[in-house]
Length: 321
Image 1 (cartoon, helix red, strand yellow):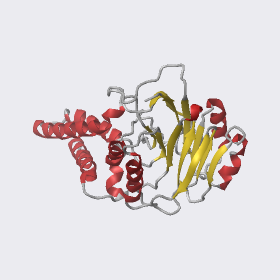
Image 2: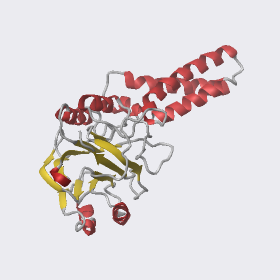
Image 3: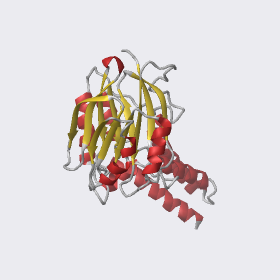
Image 4: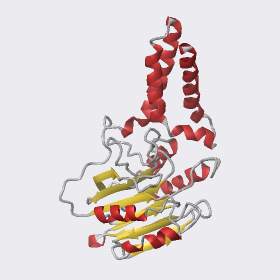
């Protein structure tokens, strides 16, 4: 019985490892790009368990299969461990000019606005980006308006509302549905000290799922549209938001390669922001990418605000290039 269970689980792990390699954007295929950490843990465990099988020949086969699957899965997630070289240099205090950004997918049906306001007042970010915010959330966050005089409001009741709160002046603000109607993104310049302008793109594309888009095509298209827009640009750039994609997916890898932007998490950790309620099923869905004009001050996952996402707080330090 033990051998049957190990064999069956190994076959399942083999299938979920191979399915993302199929030339398909269907959510049933792409969803297995997310739990690579969990699959790696399971395949390592199965490889160890296989040593205790009574049949030496079967043990060799199962240890070999699970060992190869483990190596393959770990190769994807390895850049987001502390064993990998950091991609973004750590800034040395004191900082001449920095931008502290908090992104928070609040979960539209969650009404714990007081917890988010408390985090904002505690950490004093320069920019706050809220996702899934409807009219209720817009009204509930009015207490921070005096601290954030520059705002962009897009309240929606379809889980894709978006609000931007900034202490910096905003210029050339555009609120666009890049790919899908009703899925907005915010594009603008933040004007820092000494009239330094940073081009920012705040995104929240729809995920591939049985309840939303059956394929990942719209999400992938939105990320690649931005990647191509910023490719080759010499101005300071920041792209952030809930991208509904994991950091190690082929799409996000293509985004980084095409855009030339850097990921401050590489070599530092995954900073898993979803799902807040299930510790063993978490992935990095909330991202921040930036041009070479920045070094990293801090990046940290914030405490729960009763959403399915944890807020992400990042401080990028501007350096002259």
